[in-house]
Length: 632
Image 1 (tube, one colour):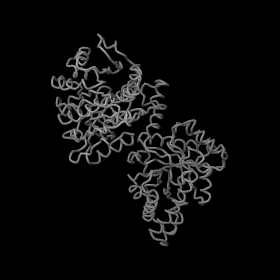
Image 2 (cartoon, rainbow, N blue to C red):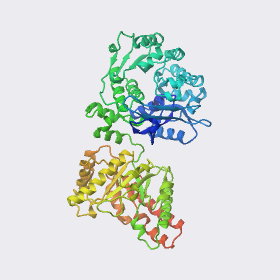
Image 3 (tube, helix red, strand yellow):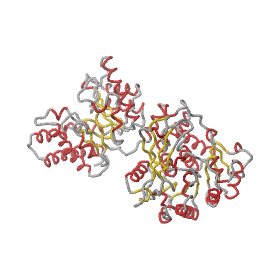
Image 4 (cartoon, rainbow, N blue to C red):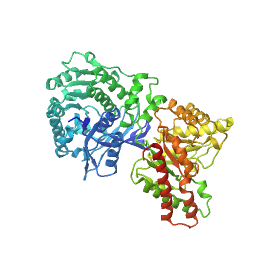
């Protein structure tokens, strides 16, 4: 039978809490960003981003952090069948900070943590042999129970003819050689650790480490002598990482100098954060190794992936997609601080977004002004009605993918909160209803800092009534708000949907919407989503789509708005829009809820009747879209 996986990593998994402030002590960090962490976990995600089919064997706690790791891995495309939920122990945590270019303090919270309870029973032979390679990391050789699990996986792999690799991943703290406050320490000599490592090195085809890590593996602080000591017990290819000097590979005898090993090109970039760089390096190396590249090519991939990690915040979030890596290798370095390279960062963001939203059937009930104008409407009643809208949306979706909603937080807070974690796509508006020039809801704040409170699954939606013939002052004010909002979204890791309706601000032709789209791209605004009014001509659609694709080939796509149109008119507009693959679906509101809202606010219909009425209309519109797309 063919292999279904390229690589299985085994060992540590944790939640990394990264200090958000740069250049201060860990003691003074005021907030933290939450990412997945642990060397094997990072490598599993990093290789998945590069297109390998990866899996992880580890343990996580039966709590929120354990679920976070599993869900994030699944979003990255990592097979999680080997992730065991421990019923008793907590998921490991790591607190990290960036003090300066050379100091990166970290504290491991790993006392009796879940991943250190990994045992032989967690290693399933049928699962292991689905892969072409197994990658182990050094920490799990530090305890008899976890060592037994690793050795079982390696024994299975070698008996099946699989490839095996070791990332030495030496952390003296995790071998009990340093105190809790010394998590940053990378080397303490120990005959015991050296002996333990050397007892397993013969099991590997590839061994990877820094010079200090080979010092512990070889029992000498002379790197060449350490490599020769490792060579005496292992025929593996040895890859020695040398920091800014790149890395070298040795497939045979160890020469007198490191410079005589095989090497790949390095990438001179600014050092911002070394934490996780080794796991990025390993991900790139495995991509080359497991796709049968020569060592200079594999090392080129590895060095580039390490460079990405060194230049960005976090571990896994810093690693590139395969498309991004190819782009970088073809284009080269334009800005040594890679995180400040706008072109590269756009590719990074756009090719690493998670979730399949190739179909978008969105019930938009983010309306505020239209509901406030209804007879009998109050803020409380509008909020209650929006929970009914959510219920209708959820009933139609019925747990299936490709459904979503637009809901505000000023009048629809309860519905917005209830939608969290349901699997529905969630868009949330920020514009003050009807404003022109564009102003934002007060919750966003004059500094746009309100976005810092948003869940990451919420997509920032803004409606701008913008026309190419607007006055210079009108254009400047609206452009400044949209541009600032876009950058605030990126800083807060939130996707951005830009809705433009030029027809409400002036006459339109086949070129109008395309002009607006190109202009915002020229301002450096790259929406994840575009929300466009239905266009009546083929030329208008083609010009608008060309404007997007020429500027951003990785955009999420377009959703069509409804403008309160009758169902028959929407059906017709869907039939036109569905011809274009970049149009992913619709976001329609008043057509679905207007009649129900008017009757419900005056008590003419019950909650159940309102839900049933909206459900039927929404389901019909979904059917219209699916039929137009040829998916019914």
